[in-house]
Amino acid sequence: EEIEKGGYDHFMLKEIFEQPKALSDCLRGRINAEEGTVTLGGIEGIMDQLVNARRIIIAACGTSWHSGLVGEYLFEYLAKVPVEVEYASEFRYKEQLIGEGDVMIVISQSGETADTLAALREAKSRGALVLGVVNVVGSTIARETDAGVYIHAGPEIGVASTKAFTAQVTVLTMMAIKLGLYKKTIDNKEAKKLIGELAQIPAKIEEILESTDEIKEISNLFSYAPNFLYLGRSYSFPVALEGALKLKEISYIHAEGYPAAEMKHGPIALIDEMMPVVVIAATQHTNDKMISNIEEVRARKGRIIAITNPGNEEVEDLAEFKSIVPETMDVLSPLLTVIPLQLLSYYIAVNRGCNVDQPRNLAKSVTVE
Ligand code: G6P
Image (cartoon, rainbow, N blue to C red; front, side):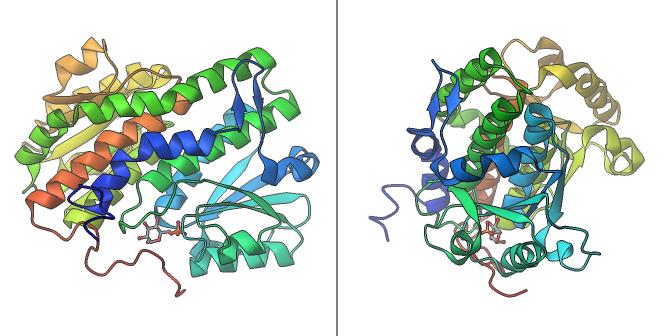
């Protein structure tokens, strides 16, 4: 096992650091920035059906559900198709309005999650086209879907998902760009820009990983906080959920992710000088609004930890602590902003002496419904 960990203390840390490679593997041979094209062998044959989709329903569990939420923003923004994201376990017990003309995308690292498999079977039996975004090659979900795209992240051992999340989001980004090109909701010039930026993501993650010391210091200060709040808007909202989930899973600290503006309808009541509030403020189009949310937290003496871009002075001035991620296009920002949050939860869990790779009560693959 020590050999498999490749010199890292835990699989989770190894997998966090593997993300530049995992994403390069995921992108390899699939994108061409010069031509502005995306080639995804697994779905080339069903593109006509995808183009005509009335709506896309994304079904998944856990971290994969969070990448589905990012997918919702991606498909709606780039391909102008309505998207609903369902917890696979809830989808089954709703009125089944899915049918022909609908496309379901199931997202699963393991390809074995029972609820996700059940949602896929339900959708398929009602005539929907079902696509998979899966890591484990030949898994049940990969086999039962009509078509799909593997994320090629390599084996993920740590129970808390890290590289699978970013690779899932990478695949969803490629799918959304491809669909946008087919539907002409984006043009070749936009595609070239998006793909060019996407190609730079692995190197930008590398940059973030080189400055883990800042995050370590923040972790040392907050390892014994009883609660955490994570706030984000738009593309950063699913990242807030994912950051909170990572912390809960491995450090057993209660954490909530919230859409930043929704904070005033509840969680703001919890904010005092004891409450660490992680704000993800790394998207241009929501920056002003995020700044006013950060001011609201500050007015109540919350301890602000900001994930932001270089030169965002207003955010830096308001935050007590910061972690800087390189700039990218807003739509691609979750691929970068999630990295410091993975590291934050990892170092806090280590400080607390938790079993990082095998947290209590959790399983890597949940095969019961
Ligand atoms: C479990 C794992 C999570 C994972 C979820 C969905 O809860 O601990 O890390 O996100 O299942 O798993 P899947 O394999 O379907 O992505």
